[in-house]
Length: 247
Ligand code: NDP
Image (cartoon, rainbow, N blue to C red; front, side, top):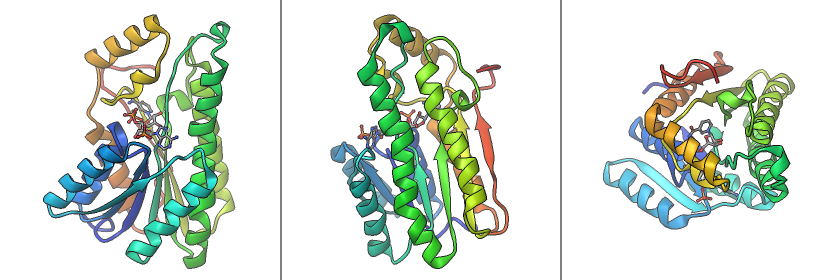
């Protein structure tokens, strides 16, 4: 695909779900993908499958809550392939719960991964983009970046934050650096596994069984944004199942 082929694209949270689908799809379009996550066994399997299909993929362990780890990840991508063109902030978790369950540790983890992790990604890749005055961030939020309901309060807050960060970043950086936000609705992945409340987990898994789209649907939206000419910045894309009408 034009403007995707040959690009060096780093993806956080590439060990399952949407990140895995993005990695596989972009590699199939000729991108050189750099996969990061904590479950390196998964990354090894996914990278091997990409390579077996003739694609280019490398991987390394990554914890987005650690700024120095994210900086090393971005620098390593550049050192392996000579440049870094796109940084995809995808890692996230969604332990839904009602506020009065007081799952404070889960609130902290969501803030650490979903917000601070994205900021760490920006701090890691922006200097590399600024040095060559080009590059693109793709931040994966959620339809929860513009909607909040019972049990999604903290999760939605983290995604509202990433939407604000993406908007602000776009205005602060050079006119040659692109910032894209992709907001998925219910998509096949392991996301519901992070819910510790048994009733909410059951509800989420039932919903995920009924009306979900494959990760490839999100990956195609990401590819569309990357494929545009350098002077076109697709700011936001919302992709959800046809049957998911509101949130
Ligand atoms: P998954 O649970 O399948 O994937 C989450 C990914 O995040 C995994 O690869 C996981 O890797 C990674 N991750 C979690 N914590 C860390 C960490 N500390 N450091 C590095 N990586 C981490 O869920 P999805 O694919 O659904 O989630 C991807 C993104 O999509 C998230 O931001 C989520 O909020 C968003 N999203 C998903 C929707 C859906 O319906 N699936 C809907 C809306 C948004 P590992 O555990 O190996 O570190």
